Image (cartoon, rainbow, N blue to C red; front, side, top):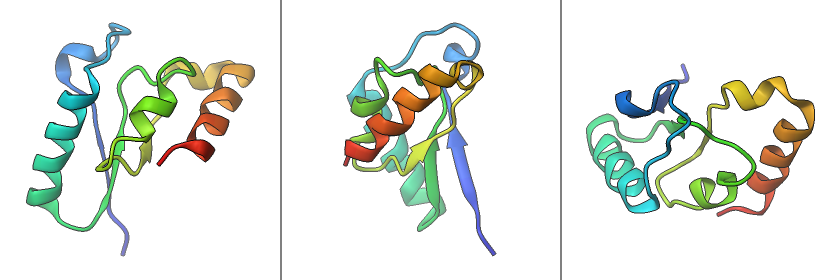
Length: 86
């Protein structure tokens, strides 16, 4: 009943590199046109330093947190950044 799509650029997987806000917006807007009204998560190198900016992108509905989820303090900082985003 529920579909969630998580996107990460292939060049970012495992690199710690994150695309800019405009690249994320453009890609998620394209995905939105293709898949419609589903939850779109950004999943590439989300960390406390960039979570608020990523989660404030209009087409981003949430984050798929990878390695940063292994550190409780870092994960909590991402969570609280998300509470103030959007």
